Amino acid sequence: MKTLGHWIGNRSVPGASGRFAPVHDPATGARTARVPLADVAEVDAAVAAARTAHRTWGTTSLARRTAVLFRYRALLEAHREELAALITAEHGKVRADALGEVARGLEILELACGIGEKLKGELSTEVSTGVDVAALRQPLGVVAGITPFNFPAMVPMWMFPIAVACGNTFVLKPSEKDPSAAFRLAELAAEAGLPDGVLNVLGGDRAAVERLLEHPDVAAVSFVGSTPVARHVHRTAVAHGKRVQALGGAKNHMVVLPDADLDLAADSAVSAAYGSAGERCMAVSVVVAVGESGDELVQRIADRTARLRVGPGDDPASQMGPLITREHRDTVASYVTSARAQGAEVVLDGTATRVEGHEDGYFLGASLLDRVPLDADAYRDEIFGPVLCVVRAASYDEAVGIVNASPWGNGAAVFTRDGGAARRFQLEVEAGMVGVNVPIPVPVGHHSFGGWKDSLFGDLHVYGNDGVAFYTRGKVVTTRWPDPADAGIDLGFPRTDR
Image: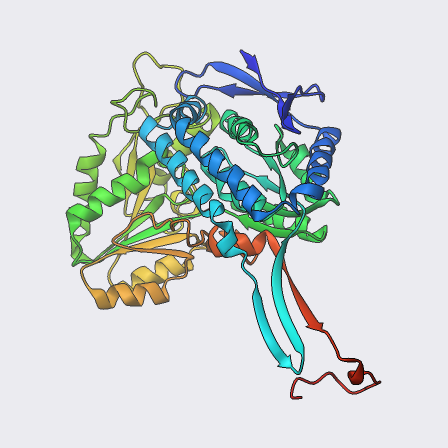
């Protein structure tokens, strides 16, 4: 079993707090590593390294910053298989899914490589006689990211490439459940030439998070996780004067209208509900079947789901891997049991699934629940596992009403052949990301990722233009080079009509 260290100032630093968390292989249940849990002094050391680094990195030319990022992108491309293997070993997702995660992270890094275009300022000349006004954006300083277990490489890469490209320095606190990918990302960044202290990674739990939220030298915090924690992060960081983007939980709905291609809808529902064992904030967790085609849709979903192959992520035959911990697996399984007691029809029950040769792994088969009451726990809670709920609606209006009544608003999708209905849905649904015949509408890097309602706390989304705006602050400069003849006192309000 290996012992990981913090990454501070471009070197691995042994944990000094005396506290460690175990890291497991979810496919076997075996303990494979331990990660240090930072105390206040270790968080302060990482922030101090970042603050020192910012003195020079914040004024480093865009050409030099982007040169490092281009080299970094080449290194990540060369090491994508290694990164995917780390993700599979600690998270459990299948290789294809892990490679896809790395690819989506690279997409944001590519955006960061072109940061010069995003940081272009504005200039207005002669706004008044001899007066020019320029607008520019500058880095904040030291910023922090707190990221979840379900995307141990992609979500950090949604944050730090944009932040450092804008001239900030970064302290990352990844999930202690699967931290190795984040540490490897930092090592490769150093190999690409990122200066000491620009990117720091801390092992840690709540104690590290709380210190980052209150640290006076941390200017902004990016967070992705559950809604209760996102709300706490937002309130605490704002109370300490920080800029915050805190992305919370989700209960993403997929509305299937009677005219939809049912085969496409069924394929999409299965892919979006059970990919990565449902441990995605953009997973489809509810299908709203509209009208009389609901029975046929459920049957098609059930037929496809029953054929899914559950197994270890490093087995090429596996389509769905284990869940992250034994405790989480048991919690997810309990929703299937409670749903039956609360009036749902259990079409498929995956709670008894076992994988031969991996009896101690955290495996759970795919479950399908039909006619789920809206007050059932399986509908009301974010399950974050391979459980798909189907609810019924008699009309389009009733379906949209169900979606909009949810406290979450991360993503929503509609499946239909009717362009008018699709257009109505785009405008009427209360969600930050909308798909039309697309079940997981995660935006490409040129746009921004973020939800509505209890899925986002803060004003700005992640990456894209919102990411650049989040990691910079605006400054407006008004300039005049007066002629000596213009001297004189004028107590009137400044005017631009002269």
